[in-house]
Image 1 (cartoon, helix red, strand yellow):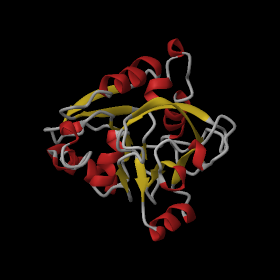
Image 2: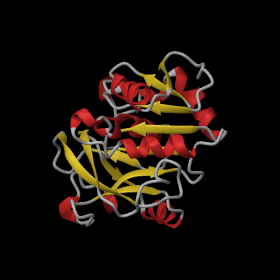
Image 3: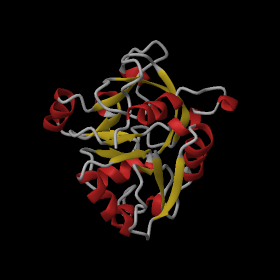
Length: 230
């Protein structure tokens, strides 16, 4: 596969993502500057974590206006695969490619720690080869990670198996105590109805190298690569 990692002013996880895809997964990767419009025939576009435009206004609100996002939106609407991690998830919601929004954490503080999440579906290529209900230890690092959507949207997400991950404890138990930021229904990641756009707050690229002592995140990239059909 050929991956394109979009770089915005303030991105700080772009090189982490490129390293994992290129050095760990052995895939072709290109960095795409936000002022460009050419996606260079990539098979999947990734919006990485960071603080695009300093998180002014709302996280992702300015980044959605970058020239490259028109191309990303067109690409996604034609069935192209797009992944947004942390700030990338916020940008996807701001741009309308994913439903809902990301709000300030309920404790109003930046949270940076390892956090267990549990996959909720195998219907998307991003989670096709992971075990539903199996806890995965994936780092989080965000100040605006509290996912929110109205009841009608939540019903659609649940009915269509669009919830990718929920926050849980080390045993896979989903509860208020295992919710780090107050996200509605413990939601940590979702997909669109067509299952080609994925967003998650936790950082799988930060736990994909054995040298870090945790490779839980690698399973997600493995799943995409194995199940991708051009």
